Image (cartoon, rainbow, N blue to C red; front, top):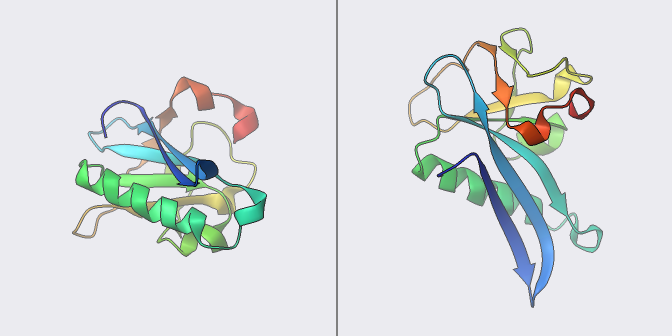
Length: 133
């Protein structure tokens, strides 16, 4: 994925059903990492698998683009359905203090097992606000 931000959408007959965004996270080492946020599905179409399908599609695209890991911040039960697992906020330090540390989740996109990067990450300017964390 070129650039710092990517978006994927689901549409039907010209109607937007859902949208997801990925934005770059930066670590001190050379890991290529992105943040998945936000994920939104129109309320009339929730519970139909649209969000999961969008996320799975986006993760495949990121993998093909050479991204190492993806992190997100949200409901572990929902994101666990698409391969995310809880990560330690002490080991992988978010850009700001997390109000819901249980929701700090990550997933490797590499074929071989890998550790999550350690240390503090920084985010794109749009998320550089403690209110979002």
